[in-house]
Length: 438
Image (cartoon, rainbow, N blue to C red; front, side, top):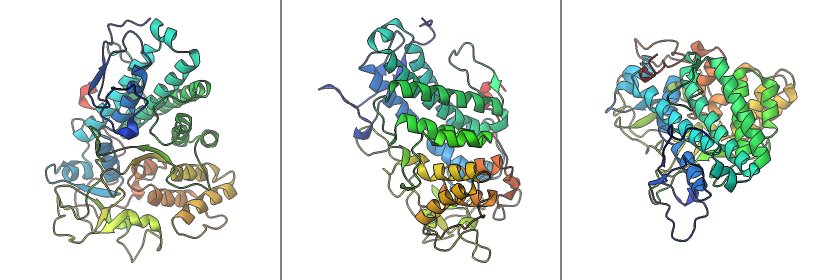
């Protein structure tokens, strides 16, 4: 058994809506916080609370991460007069190791990793082994490693070549920083191990993502393989994912929100025509350059932005301005996509682009048809087309900065609407937070 002195209490803020609920005994409450100690082993009543808590905590500071990625990728400006650092620091390219832009998502993601590690440790306790079958333990382990891999990947995407710690199970003996490539290999290994365990053990309850944990695991594995340049790995992972060339583009895994009980509202929802106290305004070249358009007329993906009624009076914060509000989330309870069918089809196209262009074209055509556009035509799927489709299909979902970086094309991000003095090209990575002692 592990030394239980290392980890005494797992605190889970079980502030969830009915959407996050599981089968509860009569009289049990969904309201929290509930404190669940699993240091000596995991019980059946504790399991759904731990799983639901992890799913809920994955949402913490997700909005900061999405906004940061979108500003760096010049997808939209985040305007907030109460914190001009969004313009004077982040958009300017001055990435500090003390700024909340990196510290908040970094801390939040590692907090979830910690919860997953505690859950994994509890599976080695004698009492857990007595209560749960070997298949059930495999399923729980598969869930924990899948979520852990997702959270580590989120951190790695921010710090890139600076690397991350992947071995943080023992707070008194943290593992070394791994390079970007090594960390991707570790993350891929966690996903493969999780896939094997989930295949053996099946689902864990609750699951509010919208797809099975196996399908979610393989979808994230495909994303990781693309980052590694492993196109065969992309295709292998996609074969066990929820990818459906005939399916809805919005099929996929989501963070859920509600106004019920102690649950939280979607923090990325911003009302139209908000002032500079809080607005998300599309970077102008997404839709505002008719003389040299970067978009195709009739593309319904352009509906992710809406013309402002009062441009530009309220939006001249730190020299940043735009005429279109981001309108991806149209209510405070809209779910936020983690990974969707549309992304998987574009990964499939990317993986087939060289070796099987016909399959790549079919996937691109499915995406374009959903956006009201015509077929791409034989022989026209290349890196430029992949980048174009990903830009409009995945707008505001935290991909463009990462995509342009992994294709070696950060310098191609249009910064013609930037202010004098903004760093160009945009920086490629955040420094490791100062708290890590680096």
